[in-house]
Length: 419
Image (tube, rainbow, N blue to C red; front, side, top):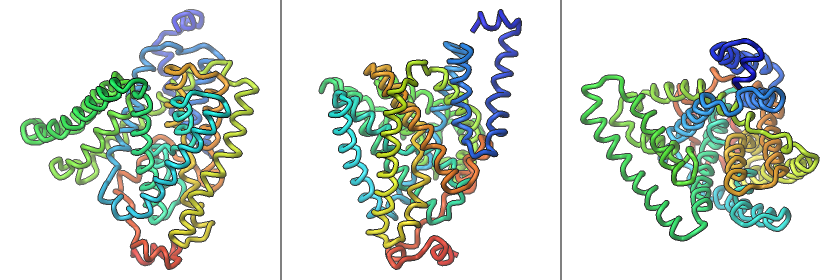
């Protein structure tokens, strides 16, 4: 980085200004061609790293990237409403069980075919089939989903992510039973501590420190993220748990009730998430995009993606009596795996030293499936300052009932009932 700055005779401050301009202006230009802002930021990082050698090893970009992933999963945790999940519990439980079967099946195939040991094979399976909840929630309004569709997309994505994070935790710490037991105890201790921290803050600090709730939430999320990182399960688990606990304390913190906290966290995420994708692009290597990587990616795309689409569509066809075309309007927005795949690919490279071709294939797979919904549904993806609209306006309306869905109500007819 310093050699680059010296050769071009520009200061480091100017370099960061150019970076900010690229991350927040270029995606706006490319959005007209239905290219998601996250993909653009990732591509800019790849161009800066692979093509020009800029910002590689830059500690400032690394820190901003960490804040981005923490803010994104904090936002996803804040969106978890167990009361809302219970309203569609029957269908959601079936959906989760089906997804667990898919994860197990894909993991076994990867374990046998690539071949990989079982633990990394499970991570590859999660990377292929787990939707990125935060990114998906950002996109719902831009994709033109109805209230009914938004409820199911939101609920299913959140339910799957909770289960996936649990599998991730167990898989990463299951090298030894002692390590798994100690890490599990530490995680439960963190979960037990968080309600106490929120309660103490709400009763003892907030009355004497107005408008300190948002800084407290962010500081707690960052601290918990570093705790889980040191436990060996990456930053996202801690941030997600803090979001869930914070949501359950919404009655004690006024900004939680009126959604201003979600608005603030959404704005924070919008500011820092581009740096996460840019940093992920910086980490790419030329060997990641070999012919084998492209071939593996094609295999993933032509086998896993159609299977994921059909499973959701057929399940809704059998359980809710929806036409397959209507079910696809729920399954298509759930295709993106961008954040989860990039995180797991990074873990696979750092912890298990997987082949560069597999790493590259996962990256290509994630980029393609992330761009598909806006092209299939013919709607523009959100830009950074357009995201989190769902949070600002509150959660989508729940379904009237599963029985109503079974009578064949289309999203349009269901919305009339809601009115």
